Image 1 (cartoon, protein in one colour):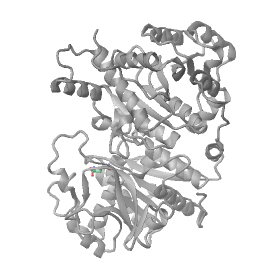
Image 2 (cartoon, protein in one colour; image 1 turned 180 degrees about the vertical axis):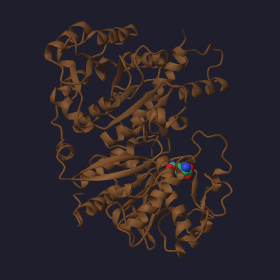
Image 3 (tube, protein in one colour; image 1 turned 135 degrees about the vertical axis):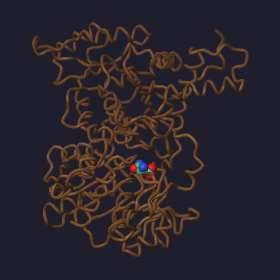
Image 4 (cartoon, helix red, strand yellow; image 1 turned 45 degrees about the vertical axis):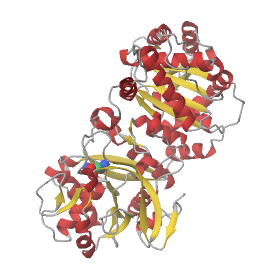
Length: 567
Ligand code: GLN
């Protein structure tokens, strides 16, 4: 076999930690990977994480959130797997499109190169062409992030046909960069059989055998189980899987995902990392993290938030949102109970008093007409009853529709997404979307600036996050994913009726003062609509300002008096 180019190779110093999964899917590999990353970050290392998704979609943007969970958006506008969001929240780093690698991307690149003649005269094959492309992309992700340690999580389960080229690629990486710069960790399920009253190790043994079959002997195992795994079971697994006994870790069911780093730290996973990757022994700085977990476990208050959405049966479809509410709860020392309210049921039933039970109402992002009228009702109820309201993306759009219909006297107002013949298209397709052809990666995506008007609720929320100030206001940025916007032709009418436009994207031609990014209602305890998705940048130790303000307002509603915020 002739190699097409000089062999690709990673940076001389960079280390790679590969995480594979066995026995079943949905094991929490993302949490395991992120937790290892957290422990490395706490030791001062520059860490990045790559998620490999062996499906043929180029990205997650075209998949149903109902099946696949949320589509996470990065600063540079990639529509990624939700694990990228978990990495960002745990590692507190901003990732990019390089951090989510799919079969679709790899094949697309290889086929394009073939058409361009990059492999002239060769037979293009999975090995070496596809595997070289995979390796090159893993190395590039590490280099672009200037990472000292690159975590690579291979999605799916060992034994799947579609993950084979990826496993082959990560096997070759040890061969290329050296044993002392690579670590393989296999995460498996350890089922507990009630009748036998014991953990069953056989599936793990088979899974490791399958992994060995493709040439990878794991250096460490993380066993997912319902309770801490007894030492004898660990020793038995170590013996049968050829893994050192002190490299078998138990990831038992946790009360909070953010508790997993400490769980693994307590079992000494750092020793394995230090030993295998020749890292110095460093005391981790985990105090802020631990304090956040402590508040999660022992909140002083609680609030109840009604989230009026479409995918209420699949909370993973709103993963970042749930986490952002949790982070904002920590900042307010409050537990946030989320009640999922089906927008469709609100449409058909009586929105009425049911909403009074909530300390806050949140309408998250969404697409399509289903449940829209229920969301409009929710916004109206929050506005009229003075219930704290946070509208994200679609949640801003329904609040504007509601305001147009019931306050600005624009009967039948709607978004052209839901009613193309509405007499008042207060929400309309962005002009640049008219030329779009194809649905993959074509929305307004990623981080865009927002100029915040002086003297607004929004300004008070972002007070300590200001990136640049000017006479007209301060500018921050948040991530976006939408095709529609507030129709500039209606902005004056909405404002004349009292709506406050507190944020705009500056410098967008033909849109009056700029694309509407935020609206609020003065005199209301907390009524905020945002075209962006601030939940994507919320972190455990750095909560998102609109969420923190929303939860503070919900706490105040519940307590009946103002509170201090911790952050
Ligand atoms: N469907 C709306 C749009 O495309 C809202 C999108 C969203 O909430 N992310 O503009």
